Length: 59
Image 1 (cartoon, helix red, strand yellow):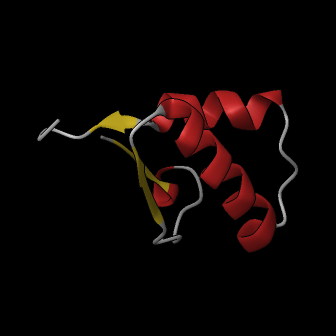
Image 2 (image 1 turned 135 degrees about the horizontal axis):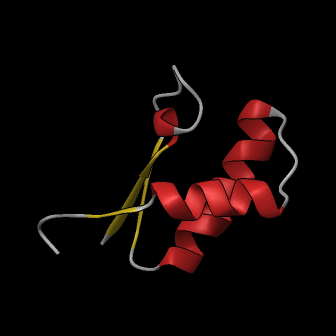
Image 3 (image 1 turned 60 degrees about the vertical axis):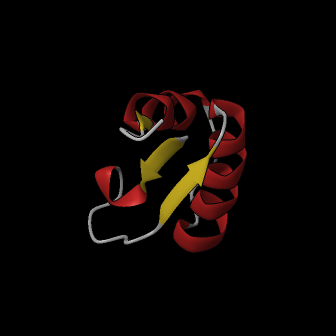
């Protein structure tokens, strides 16, 4: 299981995304970025999200 804490990228955001694959995280995070933060999904955002994804210790 992989985890992304949005607050690692957008200070103050408490959203946490958990999914089995990096692709699932990227899909959910892209929707969240647009809807919650008004961001545009571009290569820079994708790279930042990929760098912030963590493997859950229980996996």
